[in-house]
Length: 226
Figure 1: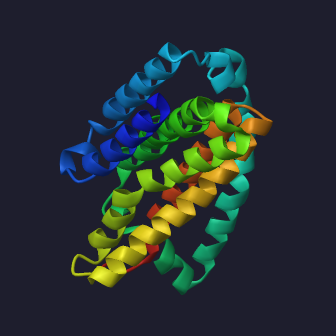
Figure 2: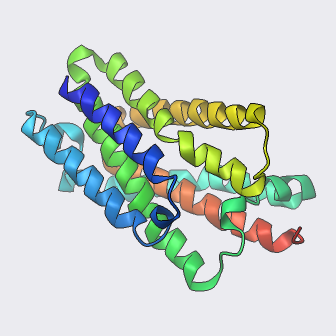
């Protein structure tokens, strides 16, 4: 029951918070770290150990290996900049107008700490272990589905920033695509986590997201303003 309630609270938290502009500013990192810390406290009180969740000092050296592996998909995205169609597709509307110190903060601080660390601790560390009593497969599926549902509002926001007048059908499609894609990504990451450690998935996640943000910023520089 604790695992189910915690999962529901986390999903509601992120989708509710993403509705407010203030959440996308400086509050993003402290709020996410506070929530992941609270979830960690719940897991520890429930009897789950740091070692079983992969949240231990010996796990973090794997971050470098994970980051190195993350450069592979980033290179594939970078190759898409070679065509106008690929460049337009990579120009994430949420990053329009971001440059200089704001871009450096996004890539070096906000994404690694506020996104990758928070999500890896919650969805590859805490939730899989809380559901592990039901079997590794169930733990992987439930935690990954929760990861997908965590992205409902982020997926919708991405569409609405670039297309504020999008139809209901397009909105539902954007949400469905975000949930499906992030659920599948979660399954891959939790599989890697179970085979290695949390440091590896954190490094991989941070490298892919930060690399994708850098590529999106470059795409905006190459795309004429509307």
